[in-house]
Image 1 (tube, rainbow, N blue to C red):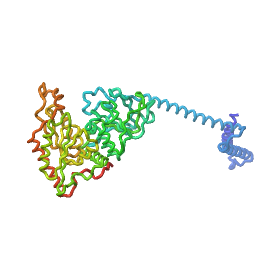
Image 2 (image 1 turned 30 degrees about the horizontal axis):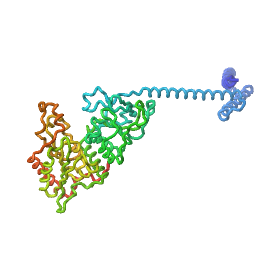
Image 3 (image 1 turned 45 degrees about the horizontal axis):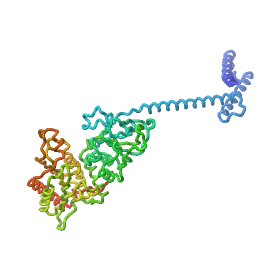
Image 4 (image 1 turned 90 degrees about the vertical axis):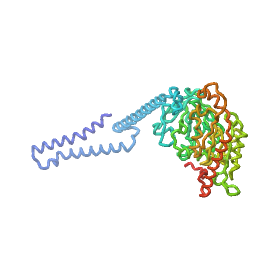
Length: 507
């Protein structure tokens, strides 16, 4: 039955060719001018034409109509051929699916997790924080924040995955990259934007916490105010479950909602978590230009004042009943380590100098008993901040731009404290303030070792601060006169150059 069509095919192709050959031979023999019209050959041609025509109609019909319940031999061949084609396609599709699944499984198994804290770089961790996600490189444009983003062109479209919840040893926590289609087995995918923060210090101290948050604010500002759905906090690769209250409130004000710190509740320590979109910061403010830093601080200042219902007009707009610009001098005091040994005497010196200047108003506050919003409102009233070295000085960025800072140190810090003693000089510059210098107490507790011995810093670090009445009086007088002259100049120009930004736009 299956040989019928080939036989029909042969009769359609060989018969005319044979006739043609015969006609050519007859022509050669007879030299007849009309050999094809001989009465003997003509019936054969007519029969062949009919056969060909019938075969063509049959082929056309076979592709347009389904086979009958009892297919003819030709129908059977067509139907079986179609079944072969379909079966081959299904088989190929099944094989391809099996191959893809096998490859996908191999990719899932090949996801390699590395320690978040790379112990090879312990000695150089402060210089670049290279021990956190050490195999990764940052994206860094000139003057911009250094960061990593997943997925991105730099990650070749792969997502960031984390595993481990250890709070004591970061080398037990790990990270990996994976394709979105082939995440590790048992992985949980977290939707929306995640901020992953590495901090070499901690999130309770307001200075150390703020320095870790500034690059996120700069990224937020540059990227159309995109807000994170969650934060993942690390310190030396160890998971941290919260920020300090001051920092939490500042981030709530900046991002128009309380920050959610991810604790991975309900997810096993050995189960990986991958993020639909993640931005990682591990260099704090490193690499940012002064302009970018100032923009970030401007945004946080403005947002904090709005959040706390403090004035956005700025100190340059305030005058007293006589039309003289008001100068707010705030003594922001500490209790315990690095407090003034005789704070009553120190307050009296600054009260006396303030009283000599028209429009000067002195406020004394203590950082340990003020809420976040109370500190914001106090700084919004401050043109000159007088305070010992300490985390409370971080609040200086909440003052208007061009405000002044006077800083005080205990004995021994200049020789032994290292670069950390200059952090508030830096933040003054980065946030648009004027650091008016520092006074360093030459007297203090005795150290049993030579005073340049590093062990003495353990004694000097928390020392009390004395005072020098003559030095303090002259210093306060000079700063007050400078601020008064600056404010009068601004008032004469009818400007508000020292005020905060007029809006909180981050776009």
